[in-house]
Length: 140
Image (tube, rainbow, N blue to C red; front, side, top):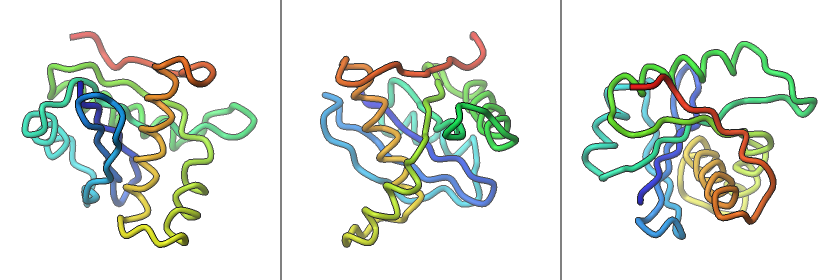
């Protein structure tokens, strides 16, 4: 099953997708400006089974205004698609993305961050890491 991960921001939204086996992760072009309809098109066109929106949580575990914005975006996407839309803790993915970009990656930094969110999500689902910190969107 393909999983689509999103690194939501006010101005742009990074995106990355897994292969059907959930092993390979590929950054996609950013969605600029963030558009739930564009995400819904990706879900249909790429046969996505789950959408994961990065949830910005501080190192202390607290949530700020950005987390609320990410949850609202998740809810908007969930209202447009017939697949589960979840959140996943995105702590440190921006720093990882910056390091990856400095190492020569050609994808946009926001989509690299989405790829790191997706890798973390997939690892948590396979039991390779700790808790998932996932939250589902509105029930359909």
